Amino acid sequence: MTQIVRFAPSPNGLLHLGHAFSALLNAARARETGGRFLLRIEDIDVSRCRPAYEAAISEDLAWLGLAWETPVRRQSEHFSDYRAALATLDALGVLYPAFESRAEIARLVAAREAAGPWPRDPDGAPLYPGDAKAMPPPERAARIARGEPHVLRLDLSAALARLGPAAETLAFEERGEGPDGETGRVPARPEAWGDVVVARKDVPASYHLAVVVDDAAQGVTEVVRGRDLFAATSIHRVLQALLGLPAPAYRHHRLILDAEGRKLSKSTRATGLSELRAAGLTPADVRRLIEPIAAPAHP
Ligand code: GLU
Image 1: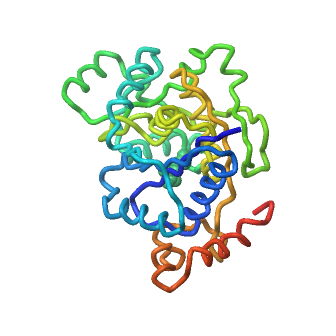
Image 2: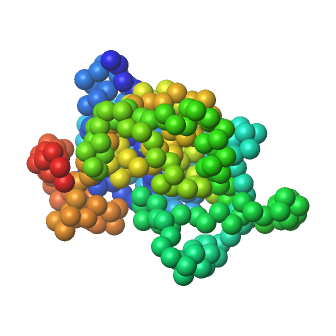
């Protein structure tokens, strides 16, 4: 079946071999299904994203021999779409504002941890303890009226109640493999994340919200991305269900790791595509570098 796929880098650094692997897999899916390969620039983090990095992304991908459709979707140009999605969620009664700083959240968590173990999300961060949910509505309204910075969080229990029986059967189609070999129909486990942020203090979106809105807006049918985002798919399914958006299929791929077995980072210069290019490697050399690392069935 024809697939519409997207490669969605954030322009907050230079692309490395891991990005090359993901982009090439996406392009291969478009090619082998007679589909479409889209590029999306995930630049909601206005403080860390730079136009120069976006230019470098296009240069590196073109050098690899990839061609994508234009216009490219740039998240910073679609804040109105995210605001509309937030309004829909708000009307469903599944959002609440939270005013704490990171340090305050750390203190709230420490207080819980003093009494016993406190759950952590799949990325290892402690779950938000939900204190802001209990704020009396008049205080909330007064603080918003004063213009106090706040995030918007998804009230997960309200969201699941809103979805009713559909919440019980919420799942996604995994065409690749999760970290524990999950494949096929995978039940969503949004409880693992708790009340995630859907709008940041400075931006009317978070990664989770923007990715779901954009995948639907771009008609993406198969999301091909790293296994590090496998767990986040559970939250994406909840947001899709609440917003009435279609669910794409997912194909999570293995990650390219460094010699110490760590995920590549944008600051590891040795694996940066522009570094490799400057060192005289060809796109064919890059493909050869990736293939053996990508081949084993399990990390
Ligand atoms: N922008 C994300 C990243 O660079 C990818 C998001 C996605 O593919 O869902 O890791």
